[in-house]
Image (tube, rainbow, N blue to C red; front, top):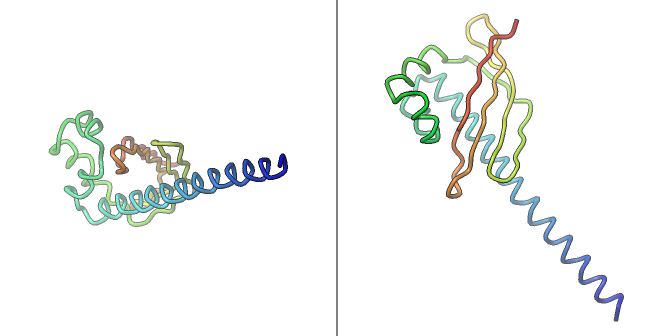
Length: 129
């Protein structure tokens, strides 16, 4: 009887761990797709599309759509490569590199999940020296 209870507990724990891993995998895929779509929108000068990928908080911090246009327009990176994604609960971080002309940049995107939707809540493009 004790063995059956122990096996039941073990199976329950493993099932919970498996379901959690599936959720993390799903969120990682969604974050990766959003990051790539965001960079593609910048490359293609889709200012409205990239604006809609941002959280309301960062839109307010930027100062509105006109300020975003000024910021985003010259950042049409020709290519990028994300090398790491970290997802923890409702927050994620994606890092890598991007090319603009002959310059290389370090890219960090921060994501936030609200109402089951991922949005970008932080952006850092730093020129590599």
